[in-house]
Length: 262
Image (cartoon, rainbow, N blue to C red):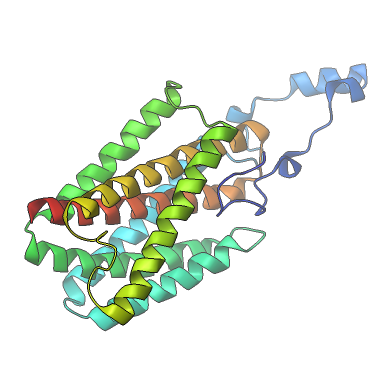
């Protein structure tokens, strides 16, 4: 399975991870033996299943929640530590992204430090806009469920054209953020106006849509990984990609709630 997710591309989520002989290459005895084997669902095959993805994703999100609780209750207003946690999370995510094999330690380490950052940030937002984090969590869950339903019912089809357009919009989105940060650092304020007002709201909505786009890529990669029989350890890569997408959506929703309530 060739992956289109930047996190999973080239990390083993490929057809080579599930190489199998073609039926015409097998003898009659080999074919008979193959058909007599237990189904993948009734025996451990060493291949990734939906259950593996669900369990790894649950574990990763559980660590994120633990980090959030730590940041919320133990490190209130420790903004320096929050920024440091965000930097560590970013480094761990980049290391995992460029590794050829998944590392549970890196994935869970990213989840913990990202959770600490989210905990401090969420408490800060909650003090200014009471209930904003809860609204963002509910919104994130709604986006996830909506995208999963749309993907499963084929209302959304991940085609080559769909991926190209989505990735092009994402690149433009990130460039705008970087340019705004650079100009803000030297000129002060929200230079491009993408953090306040109507344009800021539109930008947040675009960010949420991009997060939903990446969720659809994650769903496709999980589906193809299970179908192609990639090694079981790659469930950690699927969990990593899903967690990144959900964190992205949560952050954009948190900003959107704050802007709307202003």
